[in-house]
Length: 112
Length: 116
Image (cartoon, rainbow over all chains, first blue to last red; front, top):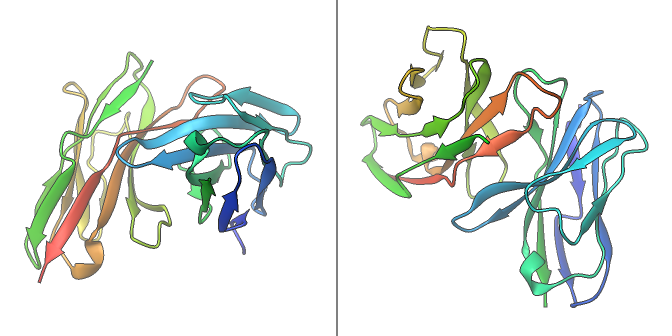
């Protein structure tokens, strides 16, 4: 059972480049979220989804897009990378509105 | 909006001793979940323990236990018989049971060091 799989684990981008962080889960979870973690800031919600075809913005959505065409996949797109987007990104999923979330192993992104 | 506060940025404990990490939260809801997550240097987020607000009994998981004070909106984590492997960042998190969002709201974390 793979759980939540994030790729890549590390990435360096140049300012202005775009890229997609991949997230896939094999647990048939309805709820999926993207968080970013910055030193001293905890984890902040970027975007989330409560099911295929349904997404919404979190606390820090600017500069990011998401889509949810299937239950399993929830990619995060950086449209035009900026140094302020240097962070560790976590994808997480939950079966329902009850209980905890399972996290992927994270992606460390550096924008130069 | 709900908020979670961890007032101790760093804590230290001697191996085999007991340490308590503090967490307070603010909410107008009566039904919710509270969690403690552990993040070791590997950066993996690991669920340590969870508490359902409607349950008065404090949750326990082996050496980890919580002191849940609903009226005071306090949710502290006690680690007994601390081990070197307990050294990590610990995050307190809140999740509403109601509504359609159900997202986790995190505190800023407490870095726990364990001295041999």
